[in-house]
Image (cartoon, rainbow, N blue to C red):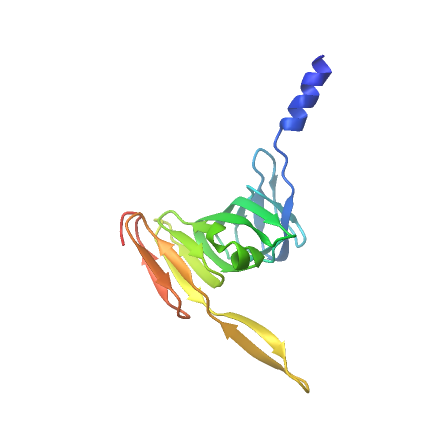
Length: 198
């Protein structure tokens, strides 16, 4: 009977699966696993899981999630992956990230195209709702958040050779406890100094 109880505990214990990969790595970055070890000095192709905390030191880390969402974390930054759920059959799901400090660049994947209401990126003072686009956010040591909407650019082959650079601009919604701003022009920016400010 005792072995049965142990088996049930193991079966009901949370286990996390790979949700993405480190696709670029320069310098030193550590990843802390929830209820698990800290992986020091990670390398390219490291498997990322839900609830991982990414801490860059003098490093820069780029993560690509299973839905092709890309997140670049620059030096001296901290990012927590709160949730990632993705159904490749319907290209729907949800994604929640928390940027505690430093600078992060976000580029939308399939979830933003099909379940954009289910994407939330939080900072100490703001929440960013993504409507399918690229943006960067910077959180300073006091929690002030600066968010900049960026164009999403791809290279498209030209008939007869060469490439054209095609850029589109989506939309993001930035909210504090008492207000919301919608940005839909390239390089628009907003700053949220406290959750209780506009």
